[in-house]
Structure formats: C-alpha cells, structure tokens
Length: 543
Image 1 (tube, one colour):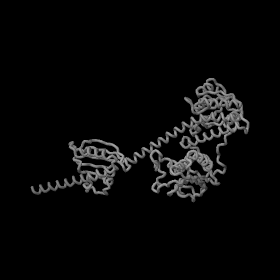
Image 2 (image 1 turned 180 degrees about the horizontal axis):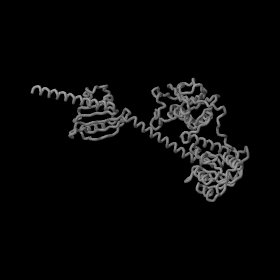
Image 3 (image 1 turned 90 degrees about the vertical axis):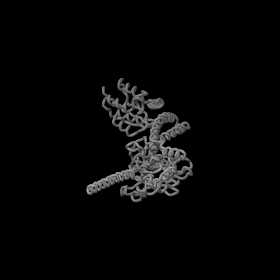
Image 4 (image 1 turned 120 degrees about the vertical axis):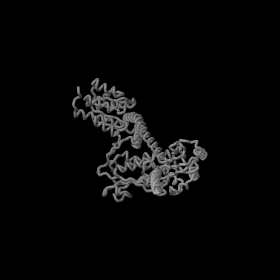
C-alpha cells in the first residue's frame, strides 16, 4: 500500500507539473500576443485597487521601463492613474470617469479622447467575469489612433482638393462661354475700324484682356488637373515665363520674383500642364515659407550633365544632358528631421486647413514620370528645389500655339451651327455670315439631327459644341456617321481632354477647337475644311 500510495503521489505530481507547464505556456502565449499588439491593456481586480495584468505597451507608455512580467506588481494603480491624468485635457471629466470605473457604475463603455500631448486615443472598458458569471475584475483597452485620425484628415483635404478641381472645371466652362462672345464681338468690332485708329486700339485692349483671362482659365484647369496629360516638345523658357506671370498675379507684393533663364537649349519632352503644376506647387510652398516676412523667389535655369546633378545620379541616364530648374526662396528653411519626409504623401508642416501634404508628393511623381529628378537643399535662411529634366533630342524649336489670327478668312458655303449658349451662338452666326457663309443655327443636338437626318438638309460643314443638354456634340457626330453623313465637323469644347480628342478622332471629327474660340482661328479652320472637302469630295451621303 505504501508503494501504491507513493506511485499515486508521483503520478499526481507529474500531472500537476504538466498542468502547470501547460498553464505557463498558455500564459506565455497570451503575454506574447498582448506584447505584439499596439493596444495598451490594463486589468484591475474586483476592487479596482490592484493591477492584475498590464501589457508591455502600457509599461512603455507610463515610462516604467522594460519591466518583467513577473514584476507586474511594480506597476500599481497609482502609477497608471498618475500617467493617464497627466495626459487628460479635462481633469474633472477624467476624475468622474475613473471614479465611475472604480465604483463599477461603468460597465461596457467606449469613446475617444484628444490628449494634451497631441495624441488621440480610443478607449473601451468592460467587466471581466468567470465562467460561472462571478466578477473577476475590470479591463481597459486603449489604442493610439493619432495616425489614423491624421490620415482621415488628409484624405478629407484631398477630397476637398478633388472637389476644387471639379469646381474649377465647371467654372472654366462657364467662363469660356462668357469670354467667347466678348472675344468674338471685340474681333468683329476691331475689324470694322481703320488700322491705327483710337477705336481699333480700344478694341485691341478688350481683345488682349480677354486673351489674358482665357490663358488664366487654362492655367487653372491645368493646375487643378482637369486637363489630361499630353506629351509634346516644350520650350521651358516660355513655360516658366507663363508660370511667373501667373505667380505675379497671385503672390503679394512682399514677394519679389527674380528670373534667370539663361541662353541654354531649354527643350524637354513631356506634358506642359503637369510640369507647370510642379513649378507652381513648389513656388506656392516657397511663398508659404515667406508669407509672414516677405522675401525673394528666384527661378534659375541651366544645362547640366548627368554627373553635375546634385544627387540621385544613379537614377539618371549616363551621358545624357539635363535641364536643371532651381526654385529658391529666402524663407525659413526645412528642419533636417523633415527633409527625409518632405516628399511623403500627406506629410505637411502646415497648419490644418492650409495644406494637404499632396503637393510635393505629386510633384515628385510627375518629375519621375518624365524620367527626371527632384531634389531639395535647405538651410536656416533659404531652400532650393532642383528639377532635373532630360533635354529633348529635337533640334527644331518646340511647337507652340500660334499667335491668335486677327484677320478673318472669307469663304462660301452652307454651315450648321449647333450651340446651346445664345450669346456664343449669335456671335458665331454673325461672324460666319459676315465672311460670306449661309448659316443655319440650332440650340440643341436633337434639332440639329432633325435637320441632318430626318429632313436630309445638306450642309458644307457642321460646327457643334460638345457640352450640351441631352445630346453631346460627339453624340451628334456619331448619329451623323451612322446615317452615312460625311459632312466635315468642327467640335468646340471647353476642356480639350485626351478622351474627347480620342472619341472625336474615332468618329471622324475634322477639327477640335478649345473655347473660347478666336474668330480668326474659327474662320480659317472652316474655310480650310470646306475647301479641302470640295477639292477631294468624300463619298456621297447615304440615301
């Protein structure tokens, strides 16, 4: 019996040891899991006087150092309360909350709190019960959601920026329709006056101001990214001069702008609207650094070799020449700790509401898409951004829009004008009639299709707006082509995007003109297309 009893005791001891090991492993697993989480976890006993459990993140947060789990008693309730009270922005509210927590009046609760150190936490409390329902203690879980709230704020700012772009597109459409009759009537008025007369000079002033307004609208569209990417050979001197003109309009007189565009070859391949956006984004940041005290914004251009670029030459093509654009300001420099993050999406040093943190990250993406390099250097009293773009291999000068054609081109033929804006329609009809055309006008696409398809009226050319109620201009053209009507078509649009141009090409549109349309350009385009159609007659329209 003694031997049997000893064996039973030994077996019980072995089993107890195994159970303790299993329990210890479970506890270690739980500890490892809570250590790995980014939550702060606290568990108190029934009286809320003793800390039963606290994970390492909570230890770190109360600055107790790397305390071993076996020393959990060293983290007492007083330490936790003192630490949390030091962060609370409202001491009375915190005391009421904690008194309720300790008394058991608060069961399942959760909420958010902005702390006085700038962080935002999400907290939740709950009773912890045994399987039999008896209360063991109370738990509190705290999560630092500062980064999440900052990201949400940046996304809201980005959404506002996108909404601003949409708004800019709508405003540009309306302004273009306003400017079109102004430009048109000024052109007609000037053409009726003798060369060199005072009245003609006045009309010319109206024309110049209207063209300036047109160019500003196009810059706004480009800056808000409502215009799509269109790669071409760019004369960077002209683009920078255009950007500087816009900056002079926008920046206060306390900011002096200095330019040194040099005499080097300044042709690059790319999308002018995108590159101008980079320049304007960086210049706007420069202005913000000088906004309070004023200063100098300097733009400088020079040609450099691959090995002359300040940094990042491993990302450039060896042996290739680059155009380096330096944008320098005399404002407060960028702190060294921010330099490494300056191009990160959503990173900004500006106050809430003054910056999205997207400008420089977008600029970096655009420059890299053009196989270039964007680099920043900063000290206490100035900052310089360097944009390095590969020079174009083209030997000819970049193609730039021709100066507006002031002279009206005469012709003959029958033209259908489709335009929903009365003022624009009247100017187009008056202009085309004055230079020799027989003009029929309709204010919507359905009425135009009734003439073209149902009544089979014949025209030498159709001039149609793109954005109209019910039926767009490209839809009118599609119906025409489906009916076998091969009449030349000129499409007018407020935003000459890639998608519109592609659709127009597929449908066989002969010319796309951006609004506001200069009458000299309009009459020459119309005359050329009608003359070409008469010289090379297309197949007869389907019966």
